[in-house]
Image (cartoon, rainbow, N blue to C red; front, top):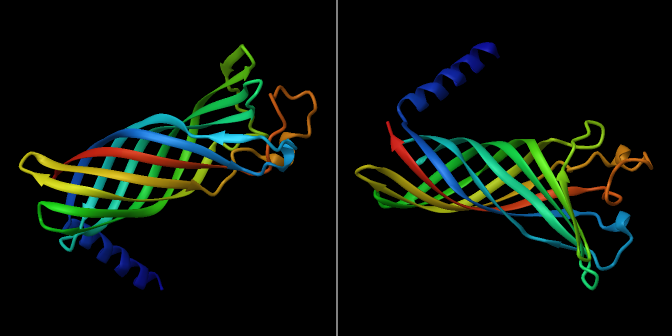
Length: 225
């Protein structure tokens, strides 16, 4: 078994050594939302809205001559949500969360040599580095930094990302424009302990499940090696 694993690893790296290696930068916009269980809120008029943000970072591709390969990224990405509780009295809660995200993606492209359609799919892991929250109650607006609690907050995320793009190769490098969607498997909060402390400084009782859904529109520039 060890010999077989060694052979597979060597074949894998041999395949990469004959692939095209692209190093690039990536920047774009995010549109995030939160999908949660509304039952703990006990409210019928709760509305969750899309929250815009930004993203950017480094991206790397190992592309096989048959136009398939892997893509690895290290990104700064803004996520969050805006939840409205009472439209008449303008009561809403907004949360922004900044992450360092690392996607591991399968990359496939097809079409002409210079102009191609690209597809990506794969898992990602993220870690929340900072966060803020804003409560609007009528005309009163309260803004503050969000204090992470290791007993109640999941700062790590595990999710799945997929998307489609347009890829064009020029004499100075490769330009790729992509639209992606990602969904988080983990919940934003550790609900089993989050509502146990009645003196906890929270704006409202938190939901049992709170999972991020993010749409991304980004442009990347690659320099091929």
